[in-house]
Length: 263
Image: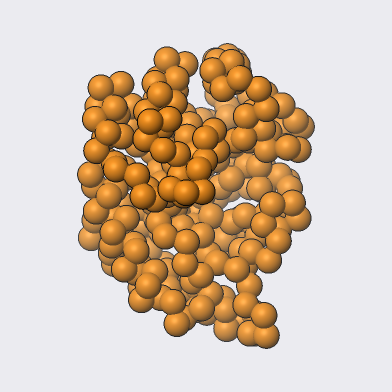
């Protein structure tokens, strides 16, 4: 099991819908210095990926995951736009040797029956499946909490997410199990992830409440990480949090916590 760090929450700039390269690469260096295996980010945005690729090679980091375009899959009229963005993301992933693309489900459409929106979501993911299967990548569908951060999001729980990917029926379409979002919506972290590990492509972690460092809040991450490792999971757990204090200090604290993990 490996650990990655999501860069964008540390220095997100709406102008480039991401972190500018002149800040992104130094943050990659901090991730490597703190002893992490990999990095990830939200969207390529308008930044040039070549300096990121070069820094990755220089630092010996892996690219764990990033998001494909934010297009509402609950709206069938947008599926062609989604698939076009997915093709671009696949090419970018190949360039960065990235095995996993993250996708959001989309936001609830007012006045449209829930069952129709769900059918649209399944149809969109089924249309995406042959693209990721041919590329050898995995598409990780992300449930997001609706109580705190993402009101109106269509897919708020991992329980429904697991049913969804079973219906899509592709080995390359799985769930991103975000421990922070899941704690807010359902709790039951260790039993849920243990029962469903074969449906999980990637994990995210942050402290709750606050979505800060994993050393904060009510989730005992030593136990959760040990439980994930005990399943034989060989992917990445991504730390995706908004820092409450110095970034380097937070990363070192996280490494100490991970070092206390015992499967």
